[in-house]
Length: 552
Image (cartoon, rainbow, N blue to C red):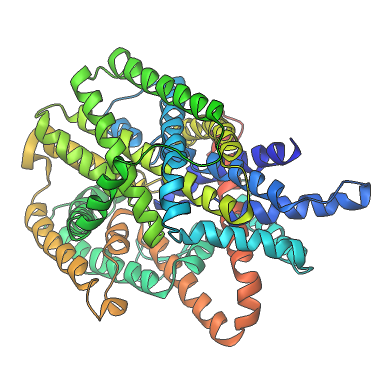
C-alpha cells in the first residue's frame, strides 16, 4: 500500500508536469527512472524513523503507478488530438476527456498484459527502457550513492522552480530569453529545455539547430520580404512555417512505417496469439477482460453520444487501434521507440479518405490508436522491468490502472488551466503535436486553400526532404543524418526553444568527454530535476493566472 501511495504522489507530479512540457515542446517524460529514484530516496529518509526497508518489488510498484500516471497526457491526447480540435473551435468538457483517456488506458494496459507472454517472456525482446529501470532499481538496493543521485535530482528541481518563478511569476526578474540575431532568435532561459537537451543527444540537438536555421534564418526573411506574414506576429509566422514542418514530419514518418513493414507482419502474427498464458490466475484474466470490455463500451457510448461519431467510424477506429497497438508494442520492444505520433497520423489520414469532409471525425479517430498505443508501450516497459525483478504481472496491471486514474484526474484539469492562462498554439504554448493534426484536418475540410500563399511549394520540398532523411537513416551514414522529427519540431516551436535544447545537448557532450564517471552517475538525475522543476512550477503559475490569483 505504501508503494502505491507514493506512486500516486509521484504520478500526480509527473502528470501535471508532462502537460506543461508536452504543450510547450511536444516531448514528455513518463518518469520510469526518476520515480524509482525518488521512491527509494523517500523511504531511505524514513528509515531512521523506524520504517522497514524499501524492497525492490515495492519500488517496481511505485514506478509502475507513477509512470502510468505520467503517460496520461498522451493517452488522453491532451498533446495532439484535443488541442488540435480546440484550435479548430471544437471544445469538449473535462469529464469527457478524462473518461475517454482512462478508457483508452484500460485497453492499453490489457494489451500490454496480453502481449507480455509473447514479447517479454517468449521472445525476450529487450525493451531497453524497462530493462534499464529494473537495473536502476537493483542498483539502488546495493549502492550508497543512490541517495546522492536523489539529492542531485531534488536540488536541481528546487533551483529550476526558483528560476521559473522569478521568470514567469512575481517579481519577474529573469527575462524569458536573451536575443542573439533578432527578436525571434535567442536563448530561452529555461531549465527544462536545458535538461531535456542533456537527454536527447548531440544528433537530435544539432538537427533542431539546423531546422531552426532553415525556418527562422532562411525562410522567415523571405516570408516577411514577400509580405506573406508580418514580422511582428509570431502566430502569423508560425502558421506559415507549420506547413513545411508538418510535411517533413508526415513524409518521414510514413516512409519509416513503410520501410518497417516487417514489424506490421510480425504484429499480425501476434494478433493470433493474444491469449495470456502462464501462471497468471484465471480470475485476474477474467477481471482484465471485463475491464477491457467495459472500456470499449464506454468509448462506444461517448463516441456516439458526445463526440457525434458514427458507429461505423468508432468501430473501425477501435479495430485499427488493436492492430496498431500490437505494432507499437513490438516496435517498442525491438527499438525502444514507441511510434505513437505515426499511429495517430496514419489513422487520421485514413479516416480523411474514408469520411471525406468530416475533419473532426479524423482527429477524434486518431486519438483512439494513439492513446491505446501510448499506454500499451508504457505498460510493456513496466512489465519488462517487473519481469526482470520477479513481479506479479497482474498486480502490476492493477497498479497501472490506479496510476492511469490518478494521471487523468490531474492531467485534464492542468490542461484546462494552462490553456485558459496561455491559450493554445501560442508562443507560450505552441503545442507542436497539435499543429500536425490541425493541418491535416484543415486540408480535409477546405483542401489546399487552407494553406497560406507559397506554402504549397515549401511543403512539397519539405516532404521530399523528409522522405530523403528517412531513407538515409537506413544507410551506413545514418549517424550523420539529421533527425527529420527534430527538424520538423524546429518549424513548430519558437526558435529560442530549439537553440536552448541544442545547447543542452552540446553541454552534455562536453561534460561526458571531460567527466565521464560523474556524468554516468549524476547527469540523468540533474537533467530530470531541471525538467520536473520547471514543469511543476510552470503548471502552478499557469493555474494561478487562470484563476486570477496572479496577474499576467
